[in-house]
Image (tube, rainbow, N blue to C red; front, side, top):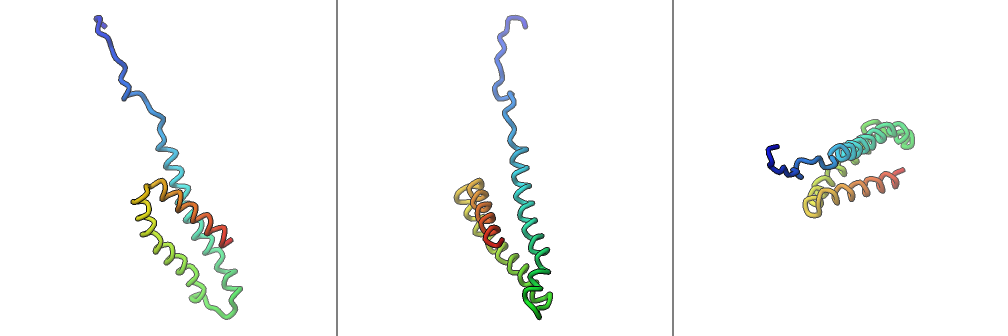
Length: 105
C-alpha cells in the first residue's frame, strides 16, 4: 500500500445487533396482551352460565370493563415510562399484567 499505514476503523466493526431480540420481546408482549383479550372472549360462555338470567348485553360489560380499565391505565403507564425510562415502564407493566392475570386465574 505504498508505505501508508492503515488504521482500523473501530466504528465500522459490527457490534452485536440486539434489535432482533428487542423486536421479539415486544412482539411477545403484544401477543400476551391480545391473548388476554381472547381469553376473556372465550370465557364469555362460562361467565354467562354462572349468572342465570343475564343477557349477552349484560355479560358484555365484563369485556367493556376490561377495555375501560386497560385504556385508563395506558396514560399513567406512559407517564411512568416517560419519567423512569422505557425499559422500567415495560418491566413494571409486564409485572402488573402477569400478577393481574394470575389473580384472575
